[in-house]
Image (cartoon, rainbow, N blue to C red):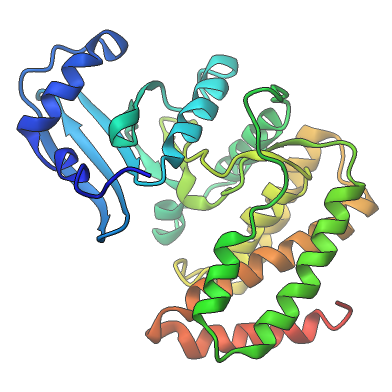
Length: 311
């Protein structure tokens, strides 16, 4: 763990320069002055997470992501792996500064797909490019660097603990987890899984797409990422999309995915529905933590439990 006190360096233009200067060979920028634009910031007595843009000069910007748990080191390794195999698919990774838990990478210009959905500017080509990129990611097979296998359930377990009044959640999750673990044991054909395949992690610019945020990457079931993406398209409150359009987006994406992978058989579709149930459940739990979304997410949970009687 990295002390939250050290995180103060990440917010100080003068202090961060000395760290950057030590890494100047890896980044190839002459660091004299740095300005900081904080995008996300969380800091408590025990932990911290930040995403910031560091302005080296008027033309050069780099993005820094840091966390007290050191998770960004793994994200750096995976991003580096993807960048070496497919340069156009991930941002250029510069380096990882271990004492600060800081991963530095290329600043991507453009819009993420979440913003495009909110602006109602989705085109077929967006979905086609996401499906094509996923098909490429699933060809990554470097088992030595990707150490994680299967879904990490720890986050959802913490959320259920936080929502202690909801007894049904614990029972439902226990059954769902058992089903998923059983599928993982049976699966002999593990492939690369991004792990957080949601609309905010796809950056579009000039008809090009780059994928970010690889800290949940692991080897697992090929239907995990498609199920995660579809879950966001169907259920996220962030996107005010009419039902008919949501259905069309889902249909188009799955058609393209099948076209690029040359597979999506009956057995995979059954597993896809199971994983989609998991991601729907995960999203509902997250929404239940917000007072203004609690009643609506409770209704979504009720519908999910009804649809999943077979569990």
